[in-house]
Length: 222
Length: 215
Image (cartoon, rainbow over all chains, first blue to last red; front, side, top):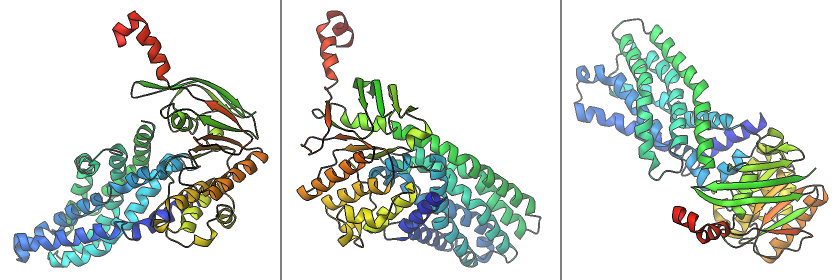
């Protein structure tokens, strides 16, 4: 357990220090959502219906931004070789790194999203559900992204391939997350969609580390 | 007991880089790997660290390569030092100590001659200091078999002497060390010279049938 907490502590420290990229995703999220009223026009009637979808799409893109460095920097400086010979199994390594990615990119997005929802005129009943949908959905983004990062490890310009590979995998999470906020705004019952989204995230949290560890093992031994 | 390597062969990208390597290493022994560039020294160390697949039989104290007991007895130090420039010298080493559940960070810093710069950012360290930090990882990871790939690169004479002392101490405590190097180390160690694997390719070229087929 101490090995796991040591790795988590180091991942968080690296992400928060200069060049870690934790603030970058948040700044990207902020700018994309501030561009929306500029592009579509400031009328509430036009912005309110697209607000949940725009916030969710911006969250997907922001979480993608720092994913390509998830394993790449460790590969380049030899850390991955040493981690692979450490007592920590590769699946645990992937899970911890993905969790650290969520803590430094997903969690700040959830805190910032309600503020940006104001600029998009999201109707008031949508706020608690927006926060709930992001809290239930964004962990899946980091864990699915870990699979892509492991597969594209060592590829030149892997970040672009990573986006093409991972964005389609985000579709179910996007549909459930954005729609459940929409349902809440329209006065429907969003709880079943939230339960489905949380269930999907749980499944991804369980399976993604295994898949990413398998891809890492292949890339390390190549 | 000890490390036993039998008929180890490794192919990378269709090329044979190791051909039928055989040797034994007893507890408390160090072995220097020699051979020209491209002879497969690094490949052999990576294979023994479990980082590359190979055919053949490798056991450490009876545990085969790939088993958990084998994996937890091996420490690998390659060409790259596995150092994060954003962290200080002490933070870098402290992480490895916590991960490997190993010995005292302070003692390792002192033994590697890094105590005076322990709070310095690794970004500001010289190549030799980074290498010393990379090797200090071995001191906080209690592992029996050390696999060192050209550990003396960028080290000054005093640091090489420190490395020799560390290896002697490790072996005196019953540890094993396999060191690929091109320099002369002051160690009571046997050496194993790897031949470049294209010695076999020459035989193929000399054979008219095989040369026509593969040449």
